[in-house]
Image 1: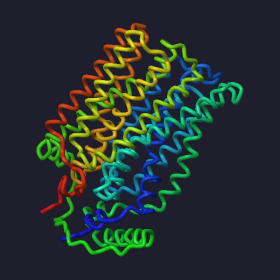
Image 2 (image 1 turned 90 degrees about the horizontal axis):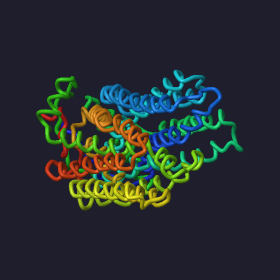
Image 3 (image 1 turned 180 degrees about the vertical axis):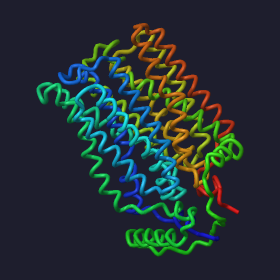
Image 4 (image 1 turned 120 degrees about the vertical axis):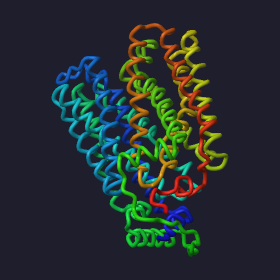
Length: 470
């Protein structure tokens, strides 16, 4: 079978349709940023809540439950996304998140709170797989890098919103100690309802339809998208000569996935694991313990932590937004090497300055903001890499697998390790943790130098041919 679906999608000019894709699907990272920031900011409120009265250990366990839910949700929903379609699953996963975060606001004890945090994480983890695959398949190849980075970086828009929201909600003069955290989690559900409405106007991925033996449906969806774009930008779209040859639809099994990852693309598999694990360790270790550092070493009150998270979040968002275009122009490999290496070097320098006692709460936040200006672009590039470097048939599951293994390898242990180091009260031991994170980022840069893939401005089917190609 010959199809021109990918070429027709990649030649489309930027339009209102693409903006809808970015807003309706990219909101996932805003929701995740909101959830993670609120969870960290309300930690003290959960301990003083007349109803919950959580201990510090229980607060830590709820964070682990969220991550565990995200890992399992990514794997479960990632498999279903490849099997049942992008559109079905990005509505299901948002629904799971919406219900679970709303339920969190009504938690009545530690067990119920941890269960609802687990389910909230499962919804967000499922979103990662469904959304990354859909975005990459709908956005033109020439813009894929910058938009994917900007969308992933929008996590920090949610973080900034969560930081500001927490300052107001945790003010005892505004809401009671047992009501502020409930309203905080409930706000995520309200935002989710708006996005669920917007997603009604998005189609199924024509690429997914194409490789699942539904060429007529794929043709119909592409024609509808072309009509929307042409009407919006007032242009006549020229026919495209490029075609793609497809055989019988590939039946995905555990064996075929293993063969693809370990035999067909072993270098890309190593690259994906290293990139995901390194950024997961650094991000989860530092961000989940951000408030602890500020309060323990600099005496920042719990209800003021959000004010210090705000500039940190802005730096994290500006990194992918401003550096993203270079991933399409200069190229994937040089930019990934640069951002990982710079963030590692700057993290080591910041750790040394912290240990030397040269920083206060403001300058510590400023240094972290600079570090993560580059680290945020690096982390977003990791998701971009694992999404575009493997075949269409297993794209969502691949994203889920690398997210899961990266989080398990680098993310779960990071917050625990830094929590132990901070509890010890020694800046020297914390410096050791920062240096470990710095080494991991620099190693990831070196691995990319050797194994990086030049995927910039190339159609997805050229970067990794479909498994159903004859």
